[in-house]
Length: 89
Image (tube, rainbow, N blue to C red; front, side, top):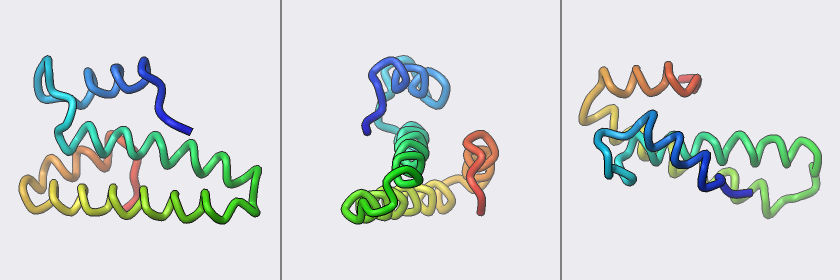
């Protein structure tokens, strides 16, 4: 249920600030969004996986905190992230 190395490299190139950037909030939010999509797909098939559901809620909470941080620091970048990642708000 993790993001593959190749997919993460694509996300780093797409959302990164520079060449060696791998930990900026934008990249972390993009990776978490990918993980949320995978977990959601998994839980549609396995509706009794309560531990997986709990993990999904933790991932969503972590992404929410990062999004709140970006919104405080740079509101325009926050709106851009929501649009690019197709996140509802």
